[in-house]
Length: 413
Image 1: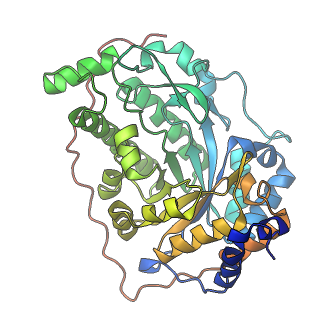
Image 2: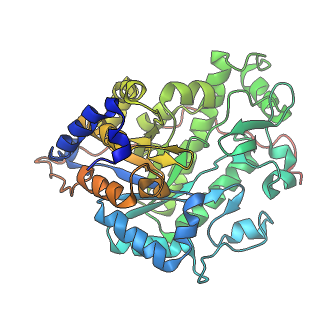
Image 3: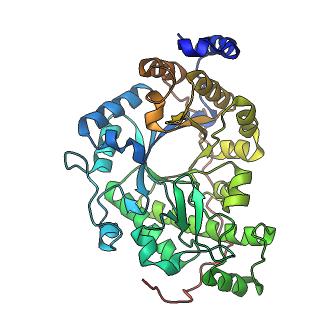
């Protein structure tokens, strides 16, 4: 039954009735016999649940009972590791070891508990190249930060004011690679996920290191206009080259590991964040894709599902649309979640939910009602086995992008 507060809104009455009927529509498996991708992000806000062993186990059981199959748990946020990181502590980025209330390794126990219930856990490098201005990594390595044309170092994000580690510097690339491989080797996790912060806002790249690198490559000085197409492409190609090397390093350390990406929709990701994820899909960098479409209504949500790059990705790798299941100051009604899940499914797309706490705790309906609704919209799935196995994916083409040059200036603390 829909929540009484919803039924007081006349415009929602018909929608609620239609949704109740839609829950009876049987699930159909996506192409190539794959399971429908069903994921949820476990953020820093969810750590009070994850840090308590008993609550964590109960949460894993609930997610398994709801037939999700991916958990994306934060391991790098705000310039600190949410796992026992020898690298982070040895480098002085944090002076403590992050552990649970019972002294446990939160990520290790989550992975173990999830595997027993058939859930894949992919550690999530949420902050990517982004860092708080007062983080130790930013304070210790000021030369690693990139800047805008006016010399300023910060931008405003959902996390507040942040700085950006220069993704074109070999030292920064090595740091990210070392952290990622530490997690891969420490946990043998099913994969790793990178989001929209594995990028760079287009206003950045005017630091001396990048300016000289661009001049060496092109014989030109970066244009004053950060939107200049050639300047955007040069920086996006450099990011792509790094992601190619990083994904290869992950697979070398753990064959079969999933490289998952969750960028914004393509036009925004490429033009504003220099994140050419369409090429990442085409060249085999990514093994699965969840596109963030955090729109407040169906009218703005639906057109994003049939974009050419979305349909192209769906034919190559498991693809899903990430929707906002709610925030503390922005609850999402259950009927709207259902409509979006149905729309995804009609396009052969899975669904990612951002984030755990909002699945059943932050909505306008009672938690029990939201759990029951999720159970209806996420029925058990048994993937069909194709009669003929799909041909093996071709080997990655050789890198066409130039490797990074050696540092132009020494590492400075």
